[in-house]
Length: 147
Image (cartoon, rainbow, N blue to C red):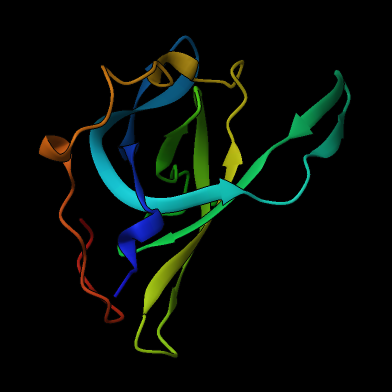
């Protein structure tokens, strides 16, 4: 059970399997939906040193009743993307915390750079999130179906 007092509606973009090549990059199909979760910035922004220069690494943390998909580079699978204050954040971690009656999933997200490869699927969603577009919540038990 998630205490929804602090939850807000956010756009969630779920990637289908990696299927096509666009300008030399693998691009997947996508489905947009809305989730009601609690999200907040995680600590301070870190600085990532890259050959092309420094880049801020923004992270988010949150919790809710939805089982989100996480990215897996080895399997060439994208994680769910969350649209937060004009930027997309990829889900890195979705862990079930069921040690109390208030069982919920804890999430961690990292910002997706605007110049990321395959950025054709990073266009903003159409309009503000509404309850009409809510995704169904998943079961709390391990092995629950994906939304």
